[in-house]
Length: 337
Length: 117
Image: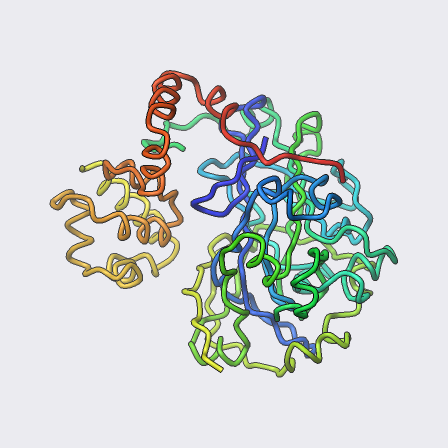
């Protein structure tokens, strides 16, 4: 089952049928859109969570095709970038997590299939994998998730499937079996504490789907699965469709202002927000997908011209991180134009 | 409310082992309070802070704000507003669920509906 934490804006996946500790959380972080200049950048900071709402609460104002998918809605400015943040939700119960954008697997570039596959690995192991910033294009390199409207031919979905049908983000989570968990994680003493706005015409009409395109390059490893494949409880899973609305439509629908417009690289630098490199010498990285390596990036679209120049930026300061810690910077206030 | 201070110190110190940004001084600076105030809170020498400060501490430490507020002996203002709107119903519900196991409570928590996709 999945619940939505209004206080944290995170999806909480619970598997009480396996164990009450079997759970994980997924949040969606706003971040700097990387310059798409062929350079490979370090990790930008998180700039706050994207808000999430039950789609059913707004069913009367959304197209039936959106509502029938269920799940949640989330606002993004056009060309805004995001990363997914994974945690154990207060536990360390491993889960296998599949992530797709427009039903294109973000790790392999293949069409969506619900079951996890071992070779080539098409899922992440959480909380071992603390975050995912984009499509895995080669070993240790991803192309950043960048919001783009469906129908312009920019999204990964349109480039790889030839269709502009789904958009959004798809997630399915499988917990580790109780037997495997007990074997791999022997009991410990209990803790004392458990637990660009779209065109105006578009904004006035029925919401249109947004999807994710491939942005600039970033150093990030997608870690391999260190466990035997049979530790995953494939008879138990929870899945969620995250429908992405553009920020103006969100405002009209929810009545709340979406987060401020995306921070530009120049503002990011001016405010001295650090970049991050990480080290995880004990973990192996997946190879990356040849399908995803062939994606044209957002910078190659006409839309990129409207969303500002992709001026290169020197990433500084760069802070070394451990494998799991990635601080969230204070949101950058927008400069008045 | 030693539980609040103990927990904040425990979480902050655990984070500080891996990340120096979680020193008393740096956490206090990000939360917008004096380091001596945070130190006294952690040692239980002062009563837990306001809801706003508790929320900021929770956010900085990556903790659930409702949990931290509970340790501070408080209920968040949005939950209070929800209860005040339908006091009889929610009082009944909470008393009913008082001894229920976690899985039973989760079954009445609103779930994110999965659909056809």
